Image (cartoon, rainbow, N blue to C red; front, side, top):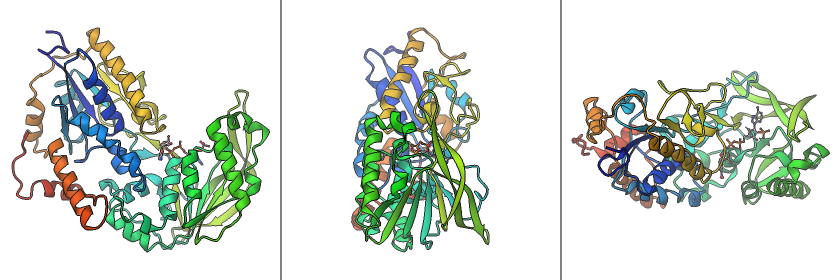
Length: 463
Ligand code: NAP
């Protein structure tokens, strides 16, 4: 029987239910003349990965992309197994025995460090932690941030740094109708943060933020975006970068902002260029200041611009530091991992050394790109999967094609897996709870709360 025929559909497991996972499922389910069954696993009971746990609560339009994912999930050939963690509840071997192909869509769950003295002081946080906290991600629910500090620093000037800065600088009353976690809204209402230092190691023509993101910060009613004029000039080494329209928009915009001066709004976002933190300075075990080294920029033969220290230092007083210098993956038992690059080693999505295993999204290419970037990326991996399937290139052993096999295995291990219908129940409860407070939704922020809402009487799991 040909695999991929109506008599014997192709069985695919996708691990991870963020955008890259859903786009892979969509591409598979839309393939003409292919019979396929897709099972998607997620360690959380809730789907959508970074769309739920990463995208900022004041960016609801971006979150509306879940409408597309709901359509994918409505396909009868698709099943969701939430609250199932690979490496804990189910192993790679369990999957390779039951699926023809495996797709890792596990994202980047950790973050890069700066590697400077003082990084372990209390008050030094990753942007990942702060983003997860205000978004009600169960991993970060228990975190706390000392928002009684008046001056804080955000290191890195990518779009994650923009999100962190905006949430700190925004008037909390403008967030109250969103899906921000209730506890985070309360903490932000009490926040004393007045100055946010936003620190870029290279110049305005190399800034990683998008024009729309920096302009959103520059348009806040609650804060002035203050830029040092002398740091906005674009030198000869940066002309190649400046020729890029997005970079030009960024550099021109911050140049204009520098001319606007200090402004009169209650909070200040102090954007600096060509500075690198060289030490987080502590007092009584807590962050008290940040030592910065001024950088000079040089371009190599290809025009790529690098920052290097100039030997000139300054110290700024800050009580909290958020490093926002990029994400990295974490290894999963039984899955190849390139520790240096922080991702799953692959060639065009084919995992190296693991036949019939594939990778999509940030786990494949590293932490770059917008949500939409993942669609073409997942389609490319699916193309490789279908080429391999057509050539009969599968894993070594026979596959147990019984669709009851996985639910039965999970039940035998007492894993309370969450189906898509279960998620829709949680979704409805969250929306209802939000209505009572004038919010889009009030999220569940712990796994026991979610499971408790699904099984008030601990009834049996229906498949
Ligand atoms: P990113 O865009 O790669 O930005 C990382 C920033 O950290 C850069 O400014 C980088 O500077 C800096 N950096 C790296 N190492 C550093 C070091 N040792 N010292 C000082 N600075 C350092 O990453 P991201 O902000 O985490 O975003 C990840 C992806 O998600 C991006 O593609 C982003 O556009 C996307 N995203 C989009 C949105 C949105 O559209 N609203 C929101 C969030 C995230 P260099 O440039 O000098 O390396």
